[in-house]
Length: 389
Image (tube, rainbow, N blue to C red; front, side, top):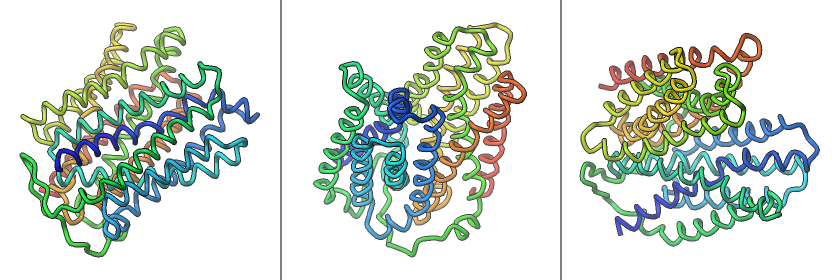
């Protein structure tokens, strides 16, 4: 039964990644149909992100009341319904309306499921599960591309992903008895299910020693990842002189690095603990960013992209997995909820800030911007370790 539940959680993480890259892959077809500027994708993205932040902050309350299994099943159901709404939308306004449940469903399941894995499973599973998320995020555009290439509209791509999410909802509902175990043991963890204490308010969470530091750590990590993902191609094309086509293809090295790195990180956790994994990732990130600054042309830039991807790989899952250790199992759900909210805030705010910098000063500041965020992340993580030791 234990292995069956783990398989279902792996499936859930693939499902979490499926919708995440759909909007970007479908938008070139969507905005023309709706007769809106291409920049309007940002509005939908911001609505989804706002819903995600709100539901992440409520994850502690909802999980304590309904349990992780039920929260996961209902959240996936809400996301499936939102995707179905996207597939049937024929106006930009309708997309904005359906973006609300889209974000609300995504945030709560992300926080609740990550906390469950952090409490009950070994660190290697956290890394491999986030690798599965990467596979799902890669499959989403593939499914959308297949729909478009066969002469169908983007609506079919959203419909296909929606159907997959409804199927997963059914699997999760049937699996609910598996989530109700008193104790789940792994090779390195044996943590009892905690009593349903009253959920913590946001001011109470922020007053916990190390909470502000880990929130800023998460903010910085996701700001770093999203800024690289969004602006790497522009940096390569506008500053390094690569063609637009080559730059777009090379930027994929970053995401390949993350996916491969998380697969490898699962094995490294057999020898290294979470703190060591985070520091290893930060060191690789620093090396990758410094490679951007070396005057070796295309080679150093591409090596920097691959290395920053490998560096990003262990940070996110290891910070989450270490949360019960640093803040206590009874507060881990609340902490992971605010971490997720901080992460999505960094994702929303920091890439557009660099866009303004690039527009007013120049895209050549890309590695310096990344370096500033990374140094703040390292400082805050080390400070958090001192306060929670």
